[in-house]
Image 1: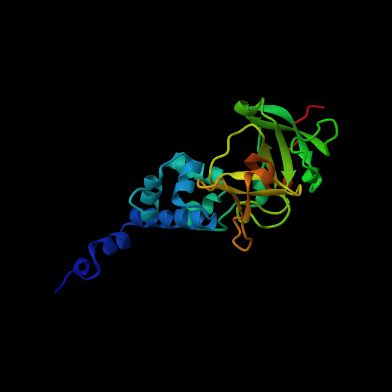
Image 2: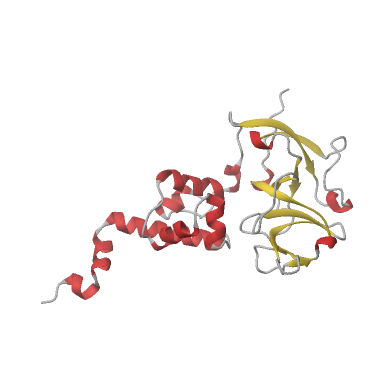
Amino acid sequence: MAKLGEILGVGFVTRMINPTVRKQMDIAKRIRELRQALKLSQVEFAKRLGKTRRTIQLWESGNITPPENVISLIEQTFSVNPEWLRHGRGEMFKPRSEGQIIATPEFVIKPIPLIAEGEAGLGQFIPNLAEPEEIIWFPVPVNLANHRLFFVKVKGNSMEPRIFEEDIVLVDKDSPIAKGDLVAAILKDGELVIKRYWKDRRDGTIILESINHGYPPIIVKPKDLKDIAAVRFIVPKGHLINFKEE
């Protein structure tokens, strides 16, 4: 009589009876689902985590499982619900209110102007600190202490599921921009948009891509782009904590 392993295959039987292997394959599947939900390529996903494409391939195939510190990094970087990533329970992403940023010794408290919806329409990308809607004293990494930073409220759903309406993004005028980065850009007509940045090497055309594929990309020549700056991080649903000392 044929053995079960010969009929079903050794790998199948191993996964069926080995909880560790089964958990490894489940995490691999959820990492792939997360990347696809974020509409990131393996290269882009790897870049956000400081890894290589090959490492992501190994994770998603189940050949290796990320160590605990890397699983935590994935959760923090993409606001992933730990229960979902580790055990498949609950929603993929954390409730938006859990994304508040707390000051630590690695951060400095810096006054950052908040731009209301539509105020960037004048084309003045760096706001006047004397007349902001609000000044938020907020913790930023020490390496950004001298950068020109400001917050922008987000309208619309063109960047879901990465950025949602009423989220607030921190924009950094002094950080370099690479292909695939999130950016805030001012178009020729003065409209301020939050998009993903690409550049055509052949003619320098800039492509501002929405993550929500229901929206077409915005394609412009560099001369038709008034200004552009990197989005450094996202504050979900505008839950800003003002750290100003009274």
